Length: 533
Image (cartoon, rainbow, N blue to C red; front, side, top):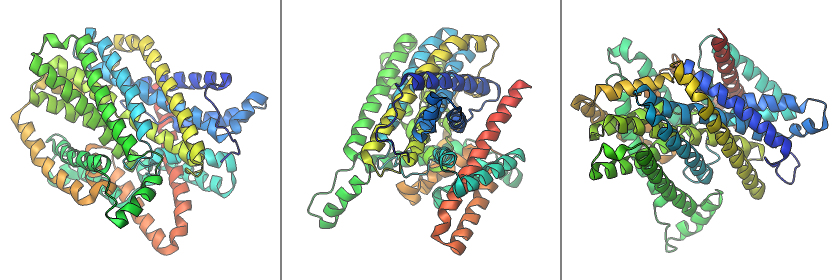
């Protein structure tokens, strides 16, 4: 960590200009790649590299960027803008456009923008609570932190990270999911084993069993069951009453447990309550501005508002849990589950389009801010100086909010150009075709049937391992051979720890960060190259 007593501010004139420029760059990259390739690249490491290069320019004002904390603000800015513009804004507004309802694009943009800001604010207030601990995996955040530290300190750490990055680039070139391989070395072994098994079933269910877990809605059903139990577990963790002082062990253990987090249970509780109210208000704004009340009775409108708020709330929690444990967040798939439920309830098609967009807008900003705050947490010394950690976290939050604002302005000025060329995110076509196909009793039956094993698996693992949610996440992701990357990575990790012992953990973590960084760099430049072609 730097010896800076005061954390650098985003409001220093040069810092503000630089972060706005990188945010514009991130927003453009995110929109361009999500409309043409359907994915959003993680630009955090690109931001860190840009800041490191700036620090090497021999001009006094640039030398300030040798500070790892300033580099952290730059990467926070670019990654927030990328995910904000692509996932939280462009995907939601593409849904009503693809439905042939361009008059709903602006109401959807208003709702999605508000949801994005609320989403990030909730994560900021929940980060380093029992529900979302700073010590959680948050793999992409760890990879970015290791990259910045390696650039700052050099030595053996830089060598290991360099080796890991080269291996990550080579593996990615040969279509091996190196981010999945890297996560296997740093996440919870139980959770990631179930993630790997889920990925394997998704890849081989057709050749092995002649069953498509996606088309039969098996994956979605499992996520519903696991998600419901995860929500109950989260509620018990945050909303359960503190034990009375009658139990001596509990009385002595509770304060110590509470003090290991910077966010108390009562703060987390209040945040979740306010978050739900905020989503309820946003759902009402969407309904009012979008004119949805003309299509629904008062009873159905109230049902829509409550369901939309609850779905957005659950969506961000499930996406956040998956992101923290695996480094992957199944935002598209969980929003799709919300859509299926909305169809079964019987909301009209345009209301379903707005519902899918609202749900899709929550989660990505939540997960991305978790990654960025994890990077900052490591760079600030893993919470050793509590006051400095909280100050740095606040500056990152302000940086992200400015970047989201830049993303919003960029989307406002450019979405018409994309839509005029019929460039919309491919996932939007899936949502729209599903709405047009309509609900069927068979789909409802499959979802309910497969929710049962999902719930059981999540219940067995408990709230700390989240094996049900991670198993469902694996079932929902169709990345070729990612299952082998995860399971082989876990096997290597177990063997190395048995042979070398606990001292092997740090070098393995640094190497793993390199694998993830190499994968992120390859996917970014590969996407840019494909765009050029």
